[in-house]
Amino acid sequence: MQLTPAQHDALSEIANIGASRSAKQLSLLLDDEIQLSIPKVDIVMVSELPEAIGIAVTDDVACVYQDMSGCLTGKARLIFHTHESRLLVQALVGSVPVLSGISMQIYEHEAMKEIGNIIISVCISTMTDMLGKETRLAIPMYREGLFGEIIEEDSRHAGVLVMKAALTAGRRGISGILIVTLSIPDIVGLLMSLDNFLAGCAGQQEPE
Amino acid sequence: MQKTILIVDDSATSRLLFRARLPGNFPYVLHEADSLDSAMEKAVSIRPEVVVLDYNMPGQNGVEIARAMLKAGIKARFVLFTANTQKSVLDEATAAGFVAVIEKPVTSEIINDMLEKVGQCN
Amino acid sequence: MTILPYHEIIDHLPLGVLIVDETRKICFWNAWLAGYTSIAGKEAAGRALEELFPEQDNSRFAFALEQVLRTKSPQIMSQALNRYLIPIRIPSLERHGVSLMQQTVSLQYLADDDGRGYALVSIMNVTENVIRSAALTELAHKLQHDNNRDHLTTLYNRRFMWEWLVQQIKQSSRHGYPIACLMLDLDNFKNINDRYGHEEGDLVLCGFAGIVDEHLRKSDILVRYGGEEFVVLMPQCDIEAAIVAAWRTVKGVRAAAIGSLAPGQITCSIGISIYDPNNPRTGEELLKEADKRLYEAKNSGKDQVVPGSM
Image (cartoon, rainbow over all chains, first blue to last red; front, side):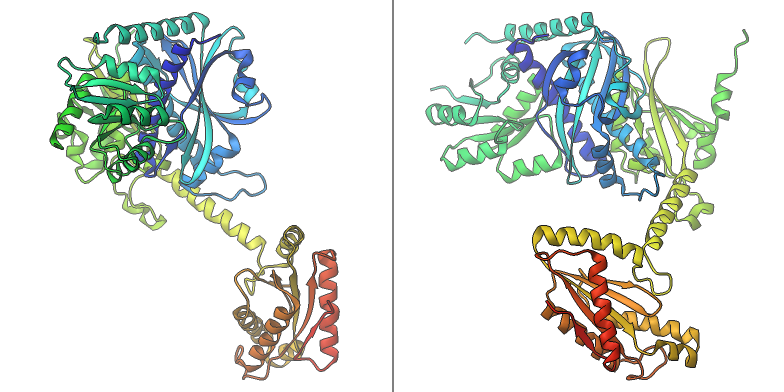
């Protein structure tokens, strides 16, 4: 799936605004300065996903996800490497010693869910607002596991919108990836909305 | 000679959107730049009244670019353009002498607001 | 199918339920909330949450509400990051260190028949989980601590020492610095136990440990190695510095009143060995040499330091 330079630029700007707004909300929630790098965006097929985002199917990841319905139907997932996400939450919520495999990370899932929910809902709503696509998100869920298992349920024929950014909070840096898995028709619809959006902007230009 | 405003943003979409949302009777001519180098070049040649800078840019951020411009002797009102209106960013902007921070995505109201703030500085 | 009294059902639920309309005003406040806050449903109706609890910083809730009403998508406010939404005192929990109810809050979008939007706010009391979790965490920290410590003197134990030493030797080899090893033994300790009793003996051990500790740097570790045997490990310490520290310790012990004994009644002997990264050996070998030197000290009249050869 190839994005034209104009589409890529527009999608990047939308992702940038979504990421920036998320950063602001997170900074209020966590009472700390949050930095989010400029997100890299792309649209790929599910089969190309591991290579495109640099996460192997055998990698251990933590994932906050929300089902999407409406004009865009599919799944929005925020993916972190498990180890990094633990460090992040520990930095925010305090650390708990791990004794002989008994992990008491009861807080950590909750906190990650909330952080993930904010990022997903702000990024998705920024996109749908700017492009006029009505979409509903379901309640956020959390799971850990192998990346391959997590995307197993996605249809081989689906497309994925990828937004990759690095988040720094509590002096801890962690890189997360927002992947939005959609059917091909929905992706085509999304690209059309992008084109309409750009055409709309161009059309409104005052003649110089 | 008409007054000019320079917008510096690496995203063509963002610059396009800004131009598209200009209110009628906008009192400035809008010029664009997409990087520190092109911004400096333009600023020196057109001597804008106002420079609108995107915060999140590859390489240097908007505040750093403003500092570089001030150092180079460019006299203009600086406005920060960002969706990341965290306190740390706002403080950084104030410390560097920005007269306003405007939020993305931009609307005509936001631009009008900005004109007011810039006007208050004169 | 009979129509159930949904209103009553929500009132009976064991969690807080409030519904907020698009103007941010409360239009439903269930019995659970009324009971815990002493604010009746009628009182809460038509007011914003900030009005009912003005001292609270409600900005997180305000954002969550705005997201839900605008995007029709759910928001959650975890206990971990927010503690609670509605301040509710629970006196009976104060002795567990928690004075306010800890809550997990979930917001969902609702629409009425006319298409107007509302936020359904569910508030769950998770205080007991929080208390239990905090107790477990404290226990885990304590266990981890106890695993590495000698019960009587609270000094590190042998188990910890061996793990630590392995790591230090690696660092020493990587960065090229020496590690000093001091093996200390209380002189004639058996006599003290026999003469003054074991309780006094224990006091002497603790007192001795305290004095030795005074002569150490932050980076050094003090280990209870045996009954009356102790080991000091000093990273980045060469033979000269180790000898100085050891003699200071011997003099300090001799001059101090320890337990209920007068100064001069307690003395110690110290054997020193040095780990040289240019001549690597194992931790066991390092301690063995210090032990040999200690033996020499004991046989030369005690109350002295015998350093190893470098």
